[in-house]
Length: 471
Ligand SMILES: Cc1cc2nc3c(=O)[nH]c(=O)nc-3n(C[C@H](O)[C@H](O)[C@H](O)COP(=O)(O)OP(=O)(O)OC[C@H]3O[C@@H](n4cnc5c(N)ncnc54)[C@H](O)[C@@H]3O)c2cc1C
Image 1: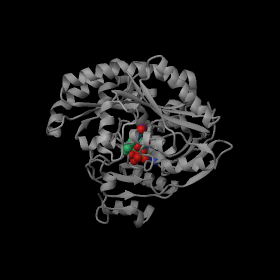
Image 2: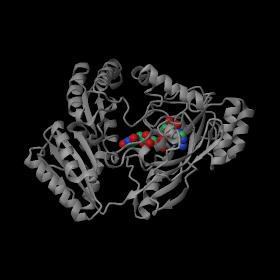
Image 3: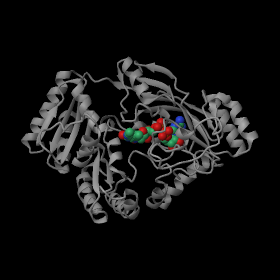
Image 4: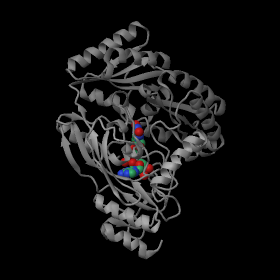
């Protein structure tokens, strides 16, 4: 890229916050976290304010320079990394990490885009409130990234996706203008809801610089339990029983197949099966109460007693201590990393209507067995949201890359065809980014795709915001 132009961008943040390949190792900014996309950039800018972001985007608009917004770099779709051309400038929000306001009376928190999710959760807890988005990358992902991917996680069953937490946004538009939409309103029917366009847009329509987020009451009691269920169908019935008995008190309901549990037991030091017997399917459940610890305990015990009576629960354990609660959650959190030592896998982050999940699991397993009979199916996820991570791991003792090169296409085609037949989504919570762009094109109707492209053209006519991603 033209040195004079790079110098103009550098002048906006100052040389200290303009990193180049000549002065820094930029691998962290250019490689997708699992190295599935390896890009290049001439410059990483680290603005400290909305005004600096706006100045960067204005210059990019004037000169037709492509920008890639980046948060905590934990995304699973390759949306936050530049392409291989070496012409896209990365704009990292990491220095915009100031919490502008915490309001326990209004139940809102106003934070800059670069605030790390866990920092935000702690700030809410400090004033006796809950910020309910919970994902295992929360120690490094950022609010701007969470909004831009409409992140999900384990709390969605009770509190909804990130979209449901956003009351207002501040966004630098592709023209470089600042849209201050930092409203704290629950009700606002004044024309098109612009904020909804930027939520889940993966940085293709503007750069989010700050947000007003909704806070929830902090539960007074919380129980975490692990239960063996005879089948996914029994798990569905247990889910509905739990919702009948505890309503919004069901704050997590995760379905786990034996294989991912085996991977954790084998690869995560110190982990152990919570139940004495080996079971094919299990559920990790969290029950919360706004009243008391005893109330949460009573609810959890009541659910399991009723579940056992109806043959929906084969065995169960409720954590007795905070450490035991942590150990149960750790089994679930380790399910992502525990797959790495098992070799390569084909991943599907899919959703179907909740009641069809047992059917999806049964037919999906048959489809995988036809396409790759020796592969190991590793299914786990957010049953309460109909969202399952339906991963297919290579067989042991073979060259994984070669095996999956041969089988990947057929596995994915079969799984996605089933998802679509059941009225589901090919990307439930990880977004489209770059890795699923072709899949989006192959699976959306022409009218839906063209409407998305029209929105992109209207807001970003010069195609400078994260080009090559999503649409
Ligand atoms: C161990 C692990 C567990 C995970 N579990 C879950 C889970 O349960 N549920 C879930 O939904 N996801 C999960 N993820 C995926 C990931 O953490 C989320 O997608 C997260 O929201 C990404 O945030 P980030 O700050 O890392 O964004 P990045 O990865 O940096 O960026 C993601 C996308 O958002 C855009 N972007 C980032 N910041 C901005 C901004 N300020 N303005 C405009 N665009 C921006 C980027 O361009 C990119 O397209 C997990 C990831 C890991 C590694």
